[in-house]
Length: 94
Image (cartoon, rainbow, N blue to C red):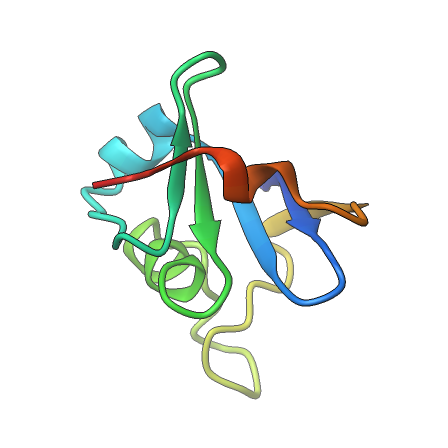
């Protein structure tokens, strides 16, 4: 089974959009670098601080991959580029 997520980026940063239920199921606690949107119940995991930790906690990294943290075959990403990232206007997760 492949997890499907959206990666939202602007010219300087990126966030992995994950349903809050997935974050809770992985028992992952995002840092204050990530954001939460209560309207759509999505968590936006910051690309450097929380994205890798969540993918590992959720068992979505591939231990047989040639480099650590590879999600090859386990995660399908839809990329979304925004000139102004709306994520930064949301409330910090904690």
